[in-house]
Amino acid sequence: MPYIWLKLDNAAKLYPGIVSKRLTCVFRFSAYIKEGEVDAKRLKAAVEHALNRTPYYSMIIRRGLFWNYLEMPQKPQVSVCEEKPNCICAPMGRKDGEHLVRILYYKKKIALEASHILTDGAGALELFKDILGEYFNLPAPEHAEKLRKDYLFDKYAQVCRPTAPDAPMSKAWRTKLHAGRKLRATSFILDSSTVAKKAKSIGSTVGAYINALYVKSLIKMAISEGKSPSDNGIIRICMPINLRRIFKIQTPRNFYLSLYPTFRIDDSFGIDYLALSTNAQINSMLRRDTLNAQMSRNLEGEFNRTVRNIPRLAKSLALKIIYRTSAMKPISGIYSNMGKTALQSFLEDKISHMEFLPTPNPLTRTNIGAICLGKTLCITALSYTENPVLENIFRERLISENLEFKVYGNF
Image (cartoon, rainbow, N blue to C red):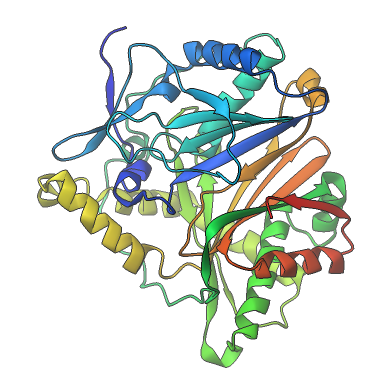
């Protein structure tokens, strides 16, 4: 195989500098098979075949003098091993030469964990679907991987056109709950058609409806901590958006942008108002000129000669400080919605449901991930708090909305 290396895309440049034992920059997809337990030998063969078609996912992290970069190993491979108890989204990419994807299994569960250094949720999901198809001996997907060397932000932001900076973000409320050491995952399983009808009845999308439940829960927490509408406090949600759908392009690399809908801390707001407000704000932020301006601003540092000539170690230290003091300060929580996942019909018959665990973040404490497979919607709260306060409030919200659900987790 010829020597191949790639510079990190814009979204990935931050992560090698901030990754730590707790801020892992790793997310997870899980699929639960209906019959029998996972065959480890069969799974390893499935992973090998999938990686032969999409070798990008086996790339390793390398440390350069000025920037980190990706390198293709001689043989496409990733780790396939049994999951250890209470080990969720462990860090990857802290050491030179580390792989950035791992496959785990435990009883009826097959899981894929990936680092944002390499790809985003939409990119990793394509590999996961290929692995599941190989595991159940389905025909290989028609789409072949295109290892894109072009820099997509660069291309679609039209080479960093000068734009006015965003208005300064006002300070957002963030929970004061003590952060524990153990990462806790709590999943709620619901009937997707029931949730869809509920969202449609108020003129909302399912994704915005779930966000409304999350925001309402955060508002209740803020009020319980003494916040009131007169404090001018707000809830600001970080919501990653898949740009592939907007620009009609396929790539295994990171290609997303984070949007930030905001809401006043006011318990008088109903779920319908919060859902419709989410829809309106996101639609406004998804205008092509607005997206282009934000993408351009994200690239400004890379085109700055001074920044480019700063050694990598100094950049990493600066990024870590900026992330903790500025980037996450105006964020109350993170909501990642993977939407409806389409699998081959035979494959859907083999899998009971899928689960998406967003990247854990001790700064925002409890984040939400959602994914839908067939008739099953799974909403997962991933939390560093010692007590499941938000999860309990979210459960109450589901009950108050007359939604039936099952709940499970590692608690």
